[in-house]
Length: 396
Image (tube, rainbow, N blue to C red; front, side):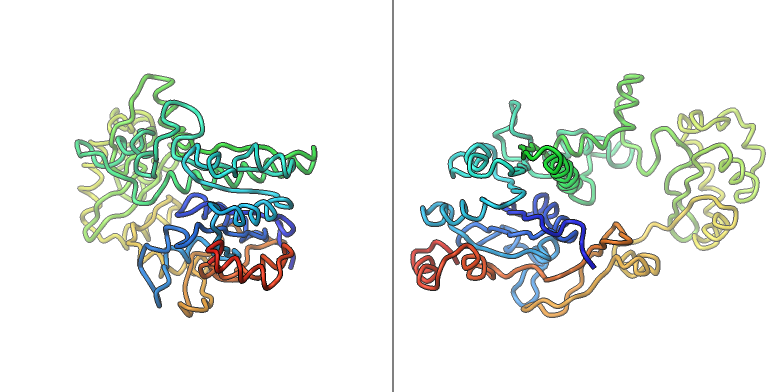
C-alpha cells in the first residue's frame, strides 16, 4: 500500500524532540527522511536514558523510519557532501539557535540559491526575530513565557510545569502542518519557501479559551486544578476509592446528572448552579457538594452510572495503566518492532488512522552514521572517497 508522502525527500538537521518528532511524522507518512547528525557524537538524545543494550530509548522513540548520517559540517568536504544532499531535497528541518546556520553556511539564503524549490523550516525557542530570538530556549522556558506554567496547578499553589513537553510537541505539530501547507503551495506554484516556527508561539497559539477570557473580559487565567474555565461540572472529582472525571458541560447533561446520577434534581433550580456560566463561577462550591455525594461510592460505581445515562466521564489513569488499557491497545497505540541492537522494542502508534495511506514502521531508528556509505554512494562517491572521509573525520 502506498503512503501519502512517498517521493518527498526530507533532510533532518534537528535534534532532541521538536524537530525529530516533526520529521518522524513525515517519515511515518512515507517521506524519505535523512537524519544528518553532528560529528562525532550525534543527536544529544543519544546521551539520554533509559538505555537498552547501550541504545537510547529516548532516541529510538522519535527517530524511526529515518536514514542516518553522521557528518562533520565544519569540514569543507562535509559541507560539500551536505550541499550535494540538499540539491534534490524537498524539505529541510533544523533547530539550531538563530544565527548558527549562517556561520555554518547552511542558512536558507545559501541553500535556496542551490535549490529554489527547497522548503526550509527552522524551529527555535523564541523564533528568528524579536528581542529574545538569540536566547537559548527549551520547553520549560516556553511554558514560563507563554503563561501556561502560571495557570497550571491547584489554586494557591506554585506554578507547575505541564507533565509533558507541551511546547516541543506543539512546535512539532506546527512545523508539520506548515511544511505540508508549503508543499501543497509548491505543487501549485513551483516555489519553495522559508518557515519560522518557535516553541513559544506554537504553545501560545493553543491557549484559545484563556485568550478569549482575557481579550473579552480582561480575565487573567488562574490556577484551576482540573476545573474548566468556562464550563462546569467539567473536572476531576474524588470518590470513595480514587478520582474520576465528569464532563457534564451543557445544560442537558447537567440536568441528567442531577436527576439520575447524584439524585439532586433540586440543584437544577438552585441559583448557584442555574446555568453553565453561573456554575463555572461557583465551581468550588459545586466541587465540594458533588464530592460529598461521590465519596459515598467507588469510582467504578459512578463511572458505570454515568455511562448508563450518557454523561461523558472517565478514569484518571497512571501512565502504566494507560499503556495497558484495553481501548488504547485496541487502537494500536502501542506497537512493537525489531531494532538491530536493542532487540524487540515498543513505541507509540500512529494517532491518525488513514483508510488508504496508513502510517507504517518501515525501519527502526538508525544507529549513529548507519547509512553513511549507502547515502554517499547514492551521491556518487566511490569506496576510496568514503574511506578518505572516514580518515579525515568528515563522517563517522
